[in-house]
Image 1 (cartoon, one colour):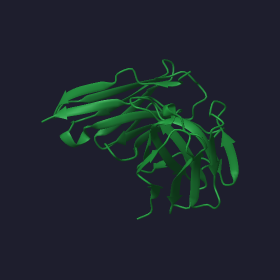
Image 2 (image 1 turned 60 degrees about the vertical axis):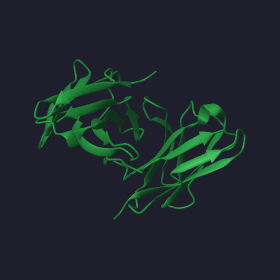
Image 3 (image 1 turned 180 degrees about the vertical axis):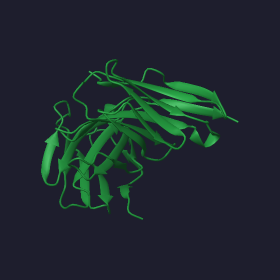
Image 4 (image 1 turned 30 degrees about the vertical axis):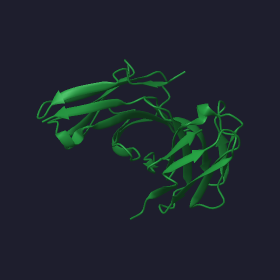
Length: 113
Length: 112
């Protein structure tokens, strides 16, 4: 089945140790999104790619970077994770344009020790 | 500043009754409003949406109502079933920026 896949599902890292979260999609969608969700809060958009065009949210910390090497893959790099970066990270895709339906991956739960 | 708000963190309803989940927004430029359903350990899944030019959209047991003057929308589930127990997120889409804005979710518990 076409889907959005996130690896790993659970990631433990140490304070200050770089970590990369992975997202892949088989939907051939133009847009890929990364959200951060903390407990009982709204998913917060970090950035999104429309094809190769990168769109960063103004309040996304510099500590967070993203790469989209091709249509299928998108990575979230956290250069120096702090305790406050522990959260669920959700990847989502959409076709873009006038099509507004988003498809989400299952998320990666990040723990920072 | 959160542009989409869900003020009820939780809702408990008896099986067979109506569930009403509410959502408020502040930005009149939003083009579409969407509801997502999320089970534990899964990502949100799309449930139903409504264009900003409509006031009602119905899909089976699910109906979304939009009141633009009040900047308010609601999701009605009739009749509620235990399998509907999940967290429901309201979201708004701004087409100019291809961005979605989410509420903090309402946890629905449908009791058998």
